[in-house]
Amino acid sequence: MMRIIKAKSYQDLSRKAANIISAQVILKPNCVLGLATGSTPLGTYRQLVEWYRKDDIDFSKVTTFNLDEYVGLRPDDPQSYYSYMRQNLFDLTNLRPGSCHVPDGCAVDLAAACRDYDAAISEAGGIDLQLLGIGSNGHIAFNEPGAAFEKDTHIVSLRESTIAANSRFFPDGCVPRQAITMGIRLIMQARKILLIADGPGKRNALHRALYGPISAEIPASILQLHPDLTVICHVKEDD
Ligand code: GLP
Image (cartoon, rainbow, N blue to C red):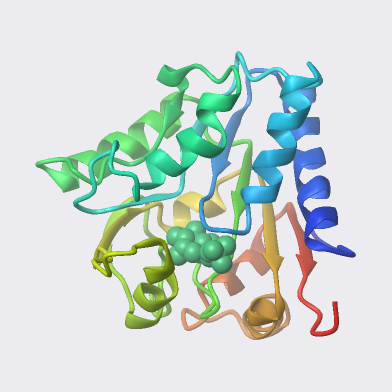
């Protein structure tokens, strides 16, 4: 089942997404959340932190797994997704550090790191709610156009367009060219998916993902087959 919720603004989108995540944590305090990076979830995390500070949400029993990480960046590198998560959520709430997982882009044996990540997710009981953004080429996590649908955590080479889009976060211009990412099969196994898309730059990709044919050229189009997908979007040109 697919629900599409049109938000009035980025703030409205962020509050609605945070409400859904908050409801998940209230209903199942020891739930497993799948988390995303990028600029879109920032407002959602800001809202969750605000509610945590008001004592409205308790993360003490929650486990998290992030979608992806750049290969070659140490967790303490300011540009790593691990640093992003610490800055925007982990360090600002009572999430227990040992319960927050981000793929290890610096592992000596990357293939083993992928298998360990998959095993940790199954051991935790699978993902209850997966938060997702969408790339302007329709990618989810770092599953670029053409990606196979049947993968779990694996190593990918980034498309030039994704490297260019993400270069805004790398002042020195050295954007990593590879990433470790949850694959589409793993993402599709989440019990619920919450996809958020903001800005006219996402309009075309979102439209093709939700209404176009299911095709590897638009990795997010597979989400049409997910039994419990919620989309919150704010992609109109005029607001
Ligand atoms: C990156 C991330 C994705 C994210 C996408 C869109 O490539 N790996 O998980 O959804 O960018 O990011 P933004 O929200 O900044 O547009």
